[in-house]
Amino acid sequence: MEKRKDYISWDEYFMGVAQLASQRSKDPNTQVGACIVDQNNKIVSVGYNGFPLGCNDDDFPWARSGDEYDTKYPYVCHAELNAILNHRGSSLEGCKVYVPLFPCNECAKAIIQSGIKEVIYISDKYHDTVGTRASRRMLDAAGVKYHKLESTRDELIVDFREENV
Image (cartoon, rainbow, N blue to C red):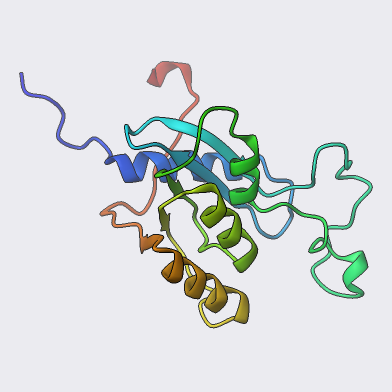
């Protein structure tokens, strides 16, 4: 018997972990996860977008528009930042981060400062915004590589049914 041929790639696996982490986000509009991986393909941290520890998500706004103080934007930590801050091990120098949405300028700063050297993403839907343009400018200047996930799959399915284990 030969080994399976339809197994997922490392990139698909780690992006799948990032997508699974995104399901922990309580944001009603945008759920993003991040998975940081070292040079040996070991997961060193995971995060998702949400409020900082100690800030009850029932007491803070989830709105996307209106007075900025009453929107989510001044409060929410993005997935990449949470994954960087959640890391409890050694340095992130040389690691990769898998994140479904191309990083904003604030997350790009944290990625660069932490030593992460590669970003793999699915969507760059905010490509032309000032924040994303600034992000690319900083990543390029700092020598951080980035590219869109290459996959032949449209989806990965997580099945919790006992009979399929």
